[in-house]
Image (cartoon, rainbow, N blue to C red; front, side, top):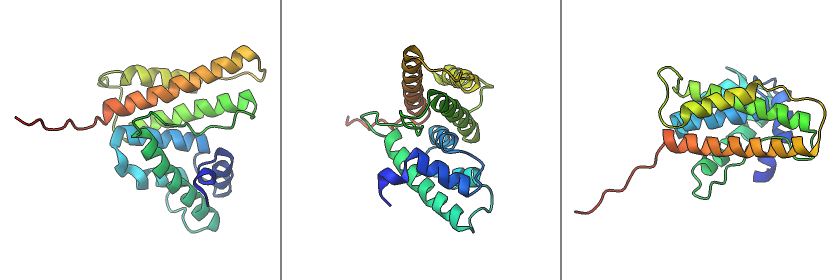
Length: 186
């Protein structure tokens, strides 16, 4: 299986549905990014159990979904630590209906918030830096209910919101998982 296929939204969505997983593709990726931002890279097993469900490893469908998720985990971890800010949100392709893409973006944000909470980030006491504002904005996006109609202005708004979410995730990761500063020679 190629890396591109392994992290394709439609392929993962179908595999998760076939495995009767507890999350869809967008929500599972948001959950993953939230856990990595909050807890670092050690959260793979916790995330897999949350997405697939406890003990859901015996069926062939669950194993296919697990393999795709493991690949997504590795790719996402690399992207979140990419100095070129190469994070890609796992969302439906641009040729999908705007309603479907907007709904998936809301589910992605919902998963991200849950991942932050699973990783130990809470809004009481209020997180430091920009994290509290990011959490608030992600909550607002997750609660939005898109309409079935589509216009050029709505397409543009969706793209701007998706990019805003992407940058917020990178900022959140930077604040919650800062790189260690090198020791200076004296």
